[in-house]
Image 1 (tube, one colour):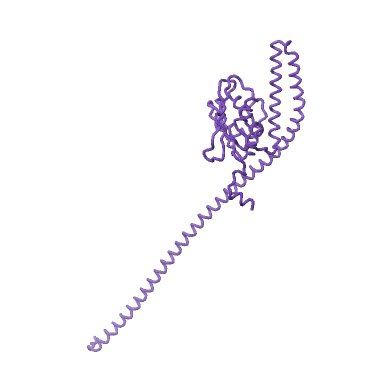
Image 2 (cartoon, helix red, strand yellow):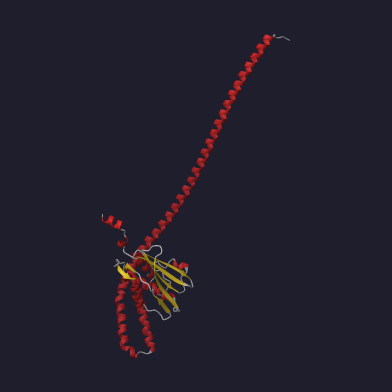
Length: 325
């Protein structure tokens, strides 16, 4: 075995130390590069995670958008169908209205002749008629009155003439209406004690009140009951007045209540189905609304909301100045 001198051993150890130092430096460099690579990999993973989350968000938004578009498409289809039905119905009602107006106009003159002739004959022959003949004559008068009322319903619905507005008392209109209608003894009509003056077409409102009061009286079904009329200020808008017409009749089922303002809809054996529709048109012409609430077995209330003043009176000074400019 070869023996090394101290100098050779020192040189060998020095070389080994240098080799180890170089290897250590390479290992440290490799470790640093590995750590940098790990950090870059983590950053890349974080970025991929962000992109994945962003993609998921975009996918969720896309699904929501697709659902919203599908809903809008379905709503649009329903609206198109509804509008189409309204147009078809309007055209059909217009044709029916024109025909009904011609028929009603042609029938009014003969009916007036029948009514006047009946009254004249009754005056001449009344003393010679027995009780049975008088009852038959009364039935004739009621039939003529019913036909006349139905013709008026048709004409009121068809002729949407411009309103002739003026300041007028609601109580005066109601009093005139009560004097026109014939109520059975079992029905009590309670008119309001207070009054409001509004800007309206009194003749048109008479048509509304006649229809509503007659419906209320008929709802009593010849039983003892009350028809009440109230006038109130609108708590939501002081520019409006509320007129409530209530009865203690049988009430209206919810299924029927949704349709009562539709033209030609009626539950009566005798009727045109145009009375409430005409009321709705007239109130809307005045810029108001009509609604109904009812409980079966308790009664029904119709609520009219009508502006007190004209559109011009409702304008503020600033609006008037701006309009003039």
